[in-house]
Each structure stands twice: as structure tokens, then as C-alpha cells.
Length: 367
Image (cartoon, rainbow, N blue to C red):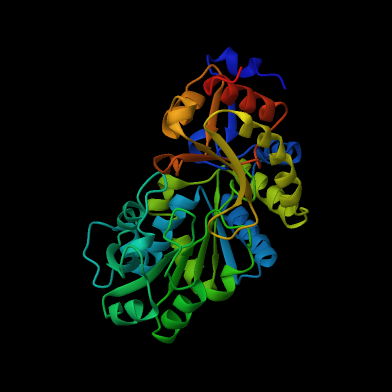
């Protein structure tokens, strides 16, 4: 792989063993996706027609009533919140944050109020909502939701993410049962989820990233019930104007989605590739095992445990050294305080695996 393009701009090579993370550009779209972006970007098109046509195509693909392309899953949260607090009213949408809204409370489980690169609650406030946390940091039950719904409730926001607390949390389906019975819309942030047809069936609005599982350009999808998606579209002429998505990104996303739904399951192949990291177990203070994603997705990673007494450094220090070296190796470092980091195989390319292994050997003194 030719890395001279990066060097031209003074950038160093990045090895992505962290997964599809925004901090390093999320994903690497296929040649056919890039071709679609190039072809679409060179066309003049009525953007309003493109919004409707692309949304209709995506809705059919995902089994939703309606859909709209947005510029990211993060903006999707703000736009969905703006939609439900204004209920699609044009004047209220144009004057968001300028005039008081009588029903703008967004119920959010405490274990879902996470930092994913920005706080979830910040996106809620950007959309004109007011967060009301429910449940506890390690527990969210149906009765917590039931008891919190009031006349001020505009929607329930359910965040389906590995960032969130997993134990003792009610499922999306359970939240949907309570919300629909009480007549309150349920918004599901499923940004990185891989099952794109599951959530439209148990929510009013669903938010997906276009660049994570789908591996398209930077973009997002909001889909769901037609009325609510129409309310989201109203926001495109309000706060959504500052979050607009270009035609080239929409065409790239449509191509990526087409490829995604026809894509074979590669999880077993990725799991097999991780075997190449097992010889690192011979290094002092290094222990490597294969683990599955905590949220139950069919994603496997190599977990590297570091015993500082024998490896000469902590897991946190090794992750930093990997990231700040001549070749920046990004690991999945959520567990460094517990003594480990993970290596995600999904975005590895070319000679990335031997590069990672050699660097870990160097740092652990096993040259």
C-alpha cells in the first residue's frame, strides 16, 4: 500500500486496530463507493428531489416507512430531538432556541448518557431538548421509564451502543412497548449497529451512521415512521442547514448501502486472522485472547492484557506508545485502566498485523 500520499501533507501512516472510530476517519470506503461519489459529485441535481428519492430508496431497503440522509449519526440525534420538540411546526423549527417549548423533555437512561466523542446530552440540547435522566448508572428498568413519562415528555431516547451500560438494562423492545403504549415517540440511536432492519420495527425514529457498519462516506441515516421523518425533514431548513450533506456523500452512501445488504458475513474470517497475534503470548507480561464484542455483536477482537511488573509498562502506557510511534497504531483502549486493550481486525489492511505485532514485541522487550 502506497503511503506517500499522506507524507505529501506531513501526515503519518495510521494502522486502525480500534474499529470504526471517528477520530481516525471511521472507515475506508470501497472503490465502487468512491466511484459513486465521484460520478454523483459531478452531476447537477435538484437537492430536494435527491433528498426524497434517496430517502425512499433507503426506506425500502431497511423496511421503514420513510428515511432521510443526514450528515452524521451525531447530527441525527439533534435533528430527531428538534423534530419531536417542535412536532414539525415550521415556525418553531426556524425559531428553535428562541422561543420556549412546552414539551421538550427527552427521557434518557442514566446508563445511556455517554460520551461517544461528544456527550449524548449535548446533541439533545442542540436539538432544543432538555434531558431528564432516568434509572441508575447500572440499572434501567421498564418501571423507571413508565414512571417518568409526563405531559412534558417529548420522546424517549434509547442509545444502543457498546459505550453504554449493558447489564440490568431493559431492551429496545421493552422500551418500545412502554413508549408506544403511552403514546410517546421512541428514538433509537443505533449508530454502529449492524442489523439495519431490526430497529425500524420497534421504534418511531432510528439513527444509523453511514460510515460505520455500512462503510460509506461520512453521513447518517434517520429512518422510521413517516410522520416523524417528515418532522425531521422540516429541520433541514432550520438547524439542519448547518449540518447539510452533500450530493456526493448521498450517492456514496446509496452505493455503500447496496453493497452492505449483499455483503457476506466475514466475522469468522476476521476471527481467524486474529490468531496471528497469539504468538505474542510468549512475551513477558503479555497475554492475548480472542473475545467477542461486549454488546453481543458478531465482532471478535484480540484482547491484549499487560502485566506491568513483567512487561515493563502498563497497558495504558503501551497503548499510548503504540499510538504515538512513527506509525500510529490505534488500539481499542477502553479497558486500559483495567490492564488491557483490544485489537479490532475489521479495518486492518495490507501488512497492518505484522506491523502491530512487531511494535508490541519492541515495546515489551521481545525484539
